[in-house]
Every structure is written in structure tokens, then in C-alpha cells.
Length: 135
Image 1 (cartoon, rainbow, N blue to C red):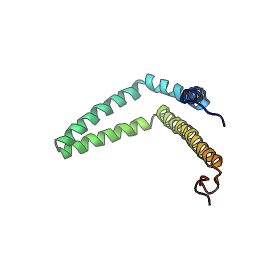
Image 2: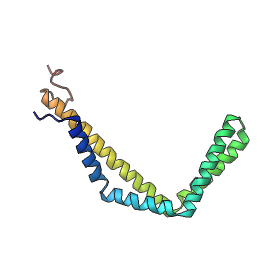
Image 3: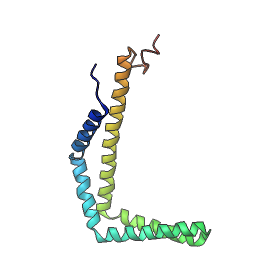
Image 4: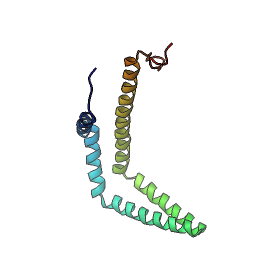
């Protein structure tokens, strides 16, 4: 049975990260992020939302419920305005895809490690029990 050091595993993880960062999905994410960062309307709305969120926190702390409702409504309106911008919609869609890819990789690694442990202890992969639990 091969033994790997923590450093070797981390080196492989870095290699995997490099591979992932050069996939079509990640490249599309990078392009869309750059477009969003360069879009003045998007940046202006984001700045307004951040300012209003700070105001909302203060209003909540001072229990100014009516003013808080107005600020929250304005935040919602600005979010809706942002979401209506096509580049923002595309960016959100690619974010979901990228997160799905990362979760798939993470779950695949976890599942494969678990299966190897079960197999190497003489267990039953189908029942999910290691050899120490199989009677």
C-alpha cells in the first residue's frame, strides 16, 4: 500500500486547483467577473446597496422600524435592478455552475476516500461498513 505525505497530497491538491482554474467554466467566470467589475451601473448599485446595508444595521440597532422598512425596500429594489442586468444574470448562473463543479469534486474525493477505507479494511462498500463492523 502506497503512503503519501501530507505535503505530497497538498501538492496534488494544488495541481488539481490549477487544473480547475483552467476549465471552461472557471474561465467564463473570470471573464464575466471582469465585465461586472468594469460595468459602472453594476458597481454604482453595489456601492449603494452596501451603504444602505450599513444604514439598515444602524437603524435596526436603534429600533427605527419604519425607517428600516424603507431602507430594506430600497435595498430590495436595487437588488431587483441589479438582477435585471443581463451580465449579472450570466454571472450568477456561472457562479452556480462553478460551485456545482467544486462540490462535485469535493464529494467525489470524500466518497472515494471512504470507499477505499471500507475496501482496505475488508468491509462492504454497498452497506457502507468497514471490515471492523462486518460480522
